[in-house]
Image 1 (tube, helix red, strand yellow):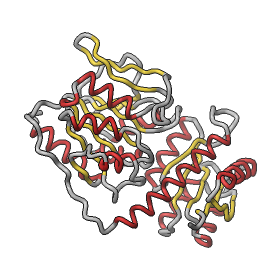
Image 2 (cartoon, one colour; image 1 turned 90 degrees about the vertical axis):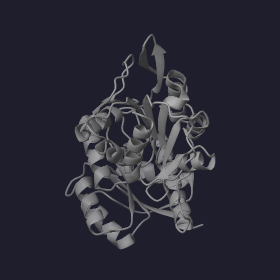
Image 3 (cartoon, rainbow, N blue to C red; image 1 turned 180 degrees about the vertical axis):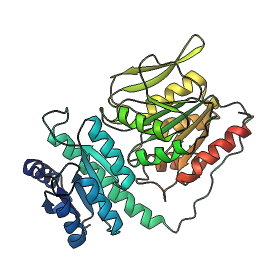
Image 4 (cartoon, helix red, strand yellow; image 1 turned 30 degrees about the vertical axis):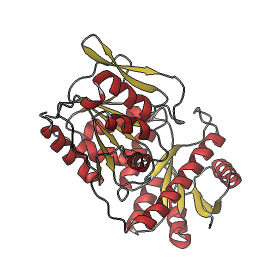
Amino acid sequence: MKQTTVVIVDDSMLVRNILSDALVKLGDIQIIASGKTGMDCVELAEKLKPDFIILDIEMPVMDGLTALAEIKKKKLPSQVIMLSVLTQHGADATFKALELGAIDFVPKPSSGNQFSPEDIAQVLWTKIRDITESNRLTEANLQRHEHNLNKSFQKPVTVEAIGIGTSTGGPKALQSVFMGLPENFSKPIFVVQHMPAGFTKAFAERLNTLSKIKVKEAENGDVATPGCAYIAPGDYQMKVVTKGKDKVIELAQSIQVNGHRPSIEVLFDSLAQAYGANHLLSMIMTGMGRDGSQSITNIHSQGGITLAQNEATSIVYGMNRVAVELGGIDFVLPLEGLVPKMLELLKMRGN
């Protein structure tokens, strides 16, 4: 198997060297060039056409966002992963980059954040490996006809809550979902997006500006409100529990589950307990690994409605693929079909 080719573009030589050394040490990756400005990035992308570009945002001469826009305008094939700083400005720029076509982001190595350069290199390496593998699987399966795996639904009961789980490729996919929701949407929505601490608040605020319903980063003790969406904060597990007549959000820095905090599994299991699995509509979307796949299958087996984003529109067909393989999904749909199907199913269930 050929090595994955990578170009690193950052105005800090230290960052370039640290990431380069660490990625090569982890294996199967060849760093074929590096640059320090956005101009370097565009030139290297045109000349070398690497599989991946690791791109800083703040750089002299031409910044990362301008370089990314140029790469996409020229239809160059490289996948771009952004290096992002943990600030409000950095988070805003990161989400702009995802809208422009970056595939994902990682926190930039710095003395000011909790991630060591080795941790960040490991996360980068895992993302590169999983995206590469997913691309190979997608190419191999393009001819496969994808169809709805819907079951005959049990006696209709009302849906009381929506659970959504997503990872790599999720921020852009979630924007699409939230932009499609109508103003009168009346169910609470609970979301786990695998994302580092420091980014989820800015992400929730961004979704709130794009959506017709209220979206917020979940806070401990929040009482679930109809027509409001709650994004699990980075580095916290999010559960929904029953307290009297209310459904209340509990956050805790408890152990990672499936290697994640927040974990989709933790959220979905708590929703099934709080609302009853047959009163849920759950959705698993683009992302690496298997987090959430078992819990959504459990919801399915107990009469809940389950949807998965299909392979063709997923950046990484991982968690959703496992859920489909486990037989836990009623409908496998392209990204743009998820909200219309959800609204149709809610109407069928008398909502």
